[in-house]
Amino acid sequence: MSSIFVSSTFMSGIFSRLISRSPVRALAAASAVALTLMAAPAARAADAAPAAQDQVEYSTPSKLASKDLMLSATTAGKRLIAVGQFGHVIYSDDGGESWVQAKSVPTQVTLTSVYFVNDKVGFAAGHDSTVIRTDDGGVNWTLSYHNEETQAPIMSVYFETEEHGFAMGAFSFVIETQDGGKTWNQRSLIEGSQEDSHLNKVFSTKQGTVLVAAEFGKVYRSTDQGKTFTEIATGYEGSFWGGMSLKDGSALIYGMRGNVYRSTDDGASWAKINSGTDKSIGGGVELDNGTIVLVGLQGYVGYSTDNGLNFTEVTRADRLGYVAVLQAANDKIAVFGEPGVKLQPDDAKKAADEVGFKFSSGS
Image (cartoon, rainbow, N blue to C red; front, side, top):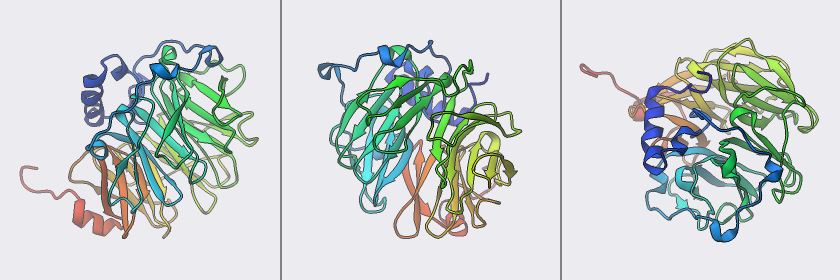
């Protein structure tokens, strides 16, 4: 049961939407907190030809795109960008107050990850081993890689430079590009390894070390720009769904049952910290004011004002699942997940008053 590790609340919400779209793909990963239930052995990526342009299905324009399932979010300069099901890509130029759907996105698969190298060049990835690229800040996208035959959901995409990047996902599926996504080659994370762990999040530290948060409490670490990785044991046996680098040089990884671990030695060792919750955690951000915010299942939003050592939980009244969070305008944060994007205060007390669950008799 290593790949079934999300709460019934979030999984049922994801499945109800994915099944209506494709019963087969409903068994694939929805995000870093909704991984695959089954997948066929992956074919060699180098053997897969890019899809012909006349075979490409473009994401359909929808006025409700910002209210539908969103699974990853990032910034491109001052622009906020999020991706989700049906190939939806949305962006905001006013700090999250309003959202516009991308003009041209050459896929209808569920997108699970987005990463920008700078304010113009970015990549998104998702189901059916799909990677797309933008050169205009997320307005228009082109197909970079697609291999439906692998049935390997990509869970995370990361670029060290505009040319060199990785896309990783279920059952240790890894592809790498050295030319900005023109060509991709499949590789093992660790040469000769037979591991088939889900690789849920790849990110880099302030020092440039590349880290991968994975199943079975594992973190993979590279100090040579991803040429080689070593396996780091954290002492935890569950799944890590995400991770982030902090401004002070430390790093966090987080996942099932509120487990959050912190490293102060560039990912070489990890220690458990107090997340203030037993709810599973999928995403996080460090705000300009130093507050660290984590989000997760059952409406969890955690705030830390001590560099990620302790978190104060705010449970949103909607009790929905959230997997990404960004700093927004006007002392707000934008949280992304089941209901699309929602705004709330960047302060725990104000958030509890404004969007927090209020217990009453019969609740």
